[in-house]
Amino acid sequence: MPPRFSELQRNVREVDSLAVLHGEVSGARADNESIIVAAIAGTDDVPLVANYGEVLANGRYLLRVTAGTSYRLVAFLDANRNLRLDEGERVGVLPARALGVSGRPVGGLNIALDPKVQLSTADRRALGGLNAVKRIELPVAMGSVVDIDDATFTPEVASKGLWAPSDFLSEVGGGVYFLQPYSAARVPVLFVHGAGGNPREFEVLINALDRDRFQPWVYYYPSGVRLEAAAQGLDSIISALRRELGFSRMIITAHSMGGLVSMAYIKRQEASGKRDLVPLLVTLATPWRGHRAAALGVKHAPVAIPSWIDMQEDSDLQQALFSRPLASSTRFALLFGFHGDSGDGTISLASQLRPEAQRDAEKVLGFDETHTSILRSEAVRDNWLMLLDSVVRPKH
Image 1 (cartoon, rainbow, N blue to C red):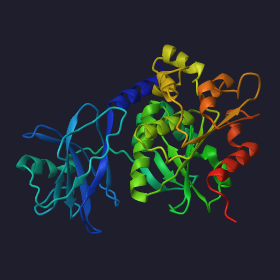
Image 2 (tube, helix red, strand yellow):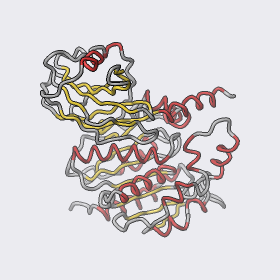
Image 3 (cartoon, rainbow, N blue to C red):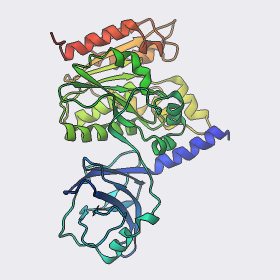
């Protein structure tokens, strides 16, 4: 097997076994104090700390664990930052075990530090030896402020997200990044890239954005994972940011496969009764009916990139996205490219113009552009800005 596919095989196995637990820990702490959350496997008599992490300043935590295993989650105030539970340090325990699920972050696992909580001797012993536990990092961004020239926003790193998604998660993490400090007075515009893509591809649109009315956010994710997993990850991050920041609207602009991820996210919102968050979805050159090459890869490659499964023509995911019309609370603008007889050089017109996608779209606009030049087109930029103006009127 070629080395690239051997590495892909390892990454696919690791992604399949990966699970994420996240939530918030409540309880006062001083600036020089830390709160630790540990995921404990094993039995009550013989507990084993599988992973641990430090709670962020906003109270959130996120732990990478193994799918298919149930964990007890314990938090404690590490007043002296020595990575061990000492006498007198407050403790909190999640009442029920949490099961790690492959491809789906499990959230809402909130813990309160309580001086009345008492741990068993075995648990205290396990939490006294965290220095000996090999911590598994998962550096997911939840509103980190970065520049568009961030060193991770490169084609080389993005390629790792496609071909080595587990390594990408461990080394980069991805997540939702802010390109300027958050302002409650500005509507977020979230940019979602496609397969092997990265946030810099949207630079022309980002630079054209009116920063008095809007603020640019980017979702950077390993594009080799299943698309529903990418949508679920976005859902978890945006839900956490919304609880913290309280914003009520977010516009989404997506390119290529990112349109499928974005639509899957919006349909998740609809299913949970949250229909008012995204007033406008703009997609550019999205393969709504998939790509013929994806099926060839799934059938003939030594190992299939997981996202290829969802990118096959008329995949289960695509059919699910269009099983019911898009809610009227989200206006949808479908921008497609044509450059030659059959499409934009990468995605066919038949895929970009899937009838159900046209059914749901308020606007369908075509441009004489390739799959990548559509992101740099002045005509696309001008039409995109007019779409944004229709949601948030210019200030006079």
